[in-house]
Length: 402
Image (tube, rainbow, N blue to C red):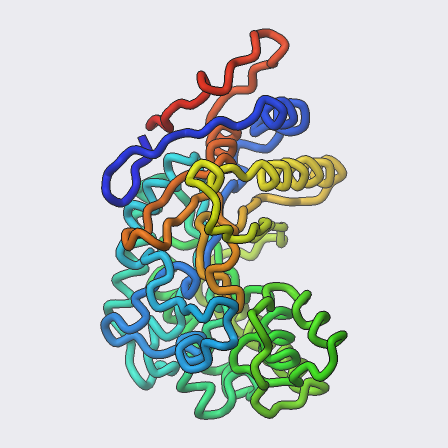
């Protein structure tokens, strides 16, 4: 059965019959090809922790959260996050128990290249960590999907030439990408160059809600409201931005992100991919958050029927699009775990796995959405009309190993 980090079993909490019927009526695993990628997604800074282990360098998020905690809703940081660096083997076991066949994660640039550039040396501890993670995934029958850049620019490059404000970063990014292709490409066949470049450009260089905290500080209530509504830009209050020109800098950053993507793809196609196939669509991130309400009981924290409905609706409509010829090959929920949610800190929860931030062990517990996902991925569909409705207490079963 699925167990927490301390070895204690995790209990399967009941999913309401209304939700269960909705699932059966709308969508099922067999509606998708057997080779369809059903996965979950995370990112390095949000879950790994171990911010200064080995020779790892500082990222812009390390510096921003530690030196300007006022920019984070709860003043927190990702120095420990959910301790995935030390708990990745247990986390892979959770993925296997859920029935996932794919997992998307990001590689921290400064964990591979502490100085941001190849000429400054490679951190072998960082290489080993990702090698061990990839090997554990493959042993569990889970396909790794790797994101190269999920917003964590090495701080040294930010200080040297302004990070993505300068075209100099294209060369450094390509060096980082090629190291990853070389070290991990024998086992990793699916690469994602950039995560949400729009969010990185706007939040970092227009609103200043993300590092490097450049842009225009809101001067009116209307501007503040607009800033707070932008994707993942929520914080307790807006700290003053550091210089910058929000009228031009987001476009310069976006331009250099596009160049970095294009050159990295060319390197991969020329050196590491034997045959280029027609591109297909992967939904690499789709999820919904909830407020981290500390007044809730343990059972209440695991009740997230709204998230189940969210996934059901998206999968149903995704299948309708596929029926009309859209070539979608995979769907990754966001997120596998509750984690550090950027400017929102730990004030919101995106995960299907609940993480206890208080007990010091970062215990993982499956929410109802995790129970639903496991049933969706691993169990045959049974028409509820052919059997009597079960009582809620009879559906409180432990998640058992396959």
